[in-house]
Length: 180
Length: 265
Image (cartoon, rainbow over all chains, first blue to last red; front, top):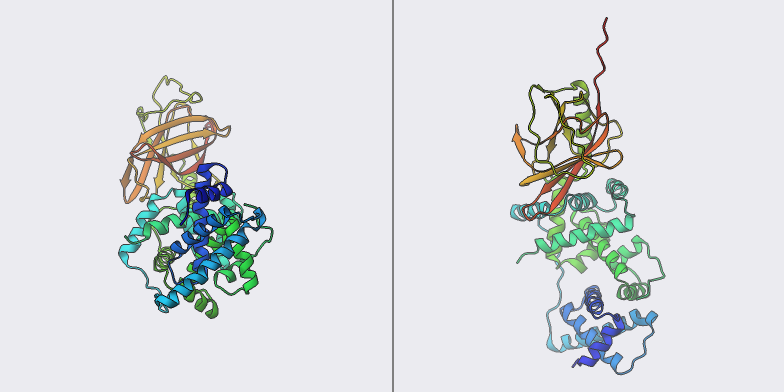
């Protein structure tokens, strides 16, 4: 079980400022969760990410010496350990297996499309233009590549920064479009 | 956390997201994902683009299968990608900040104004809208009523290299900028500012109403006489929300000149 001192030590390792440490903790949790997703973990990735952070905090409290430049590798190895444990649990409990859908995605109903239109209107004009232009075509087509170059010039952003800006607006859209 | 030292190119990151890299390469990228929030966000952004490529049928067969294996359950994200793909295929009434057709519309407005310098002439004084005075606003008392010259404009965000809207107005004339807005940009009121080339505000107005006429949403800004002496100006329009926030909708450049004196034969 995770103790308060162990959690405090982990937070301090992430950042000296408590508010910043909490934010870093959450951001790290998201990244660990993504690792489990990429690994095709059978258990919910959020739960596995929590287990990983608990284990990491305990190890640090027990005195594990992890240089700053090795922290990523160390966290990953802890996560792999948690994954292997979860797979053994899964074998024992015969947990559900992820099944990937082979069907082509449906084309979205009109209500969902209207919701998208409504959500787009709530964006600032600049954000709306960025997200509609950046994601206006498939990423490898010459016309999309050209449109993104023009957009980068318009906004004064580098291509990498533009990608991140467009993605952040898209994440807000996806959150609003999520059912429930 | 330390910044990752290895630069992975986009193709490699796409392959990573699709699960096509070797175990060693994947392990290095996974460590970087843990170490760097920026790098993580970059990978997530590439992941989003793969959703788009998948729903648009732009992935090669092998990548398509890899994508389905990994993301087939992600219904919510898939649905969002489908909707965005449909959006890009449909003409929309959601206004873009600087869509290509707006440049064409701005050019059409230039031609329209060039062909008919004064679209409407009316006698009598025009009541100016409420004006938010700034230190740089110029207010000149009028000794006698002048004409009202209407200038038809369409918002854009970039100055059309082919020219700007031009109006010929005498001293004492009111310039009524009739700005065509996107019908989707309906607000309870609008704010407008006119700046000279030196950036100083020469006129501004708030809580201005727009009206629908012939299917077009038009905002009329009555710029008082002599607020815009001959020169170039930038008119900027924002939509005003009930919570006192405003959203910049766009701007348009125009130039004011004096009519040439009529020479005696």
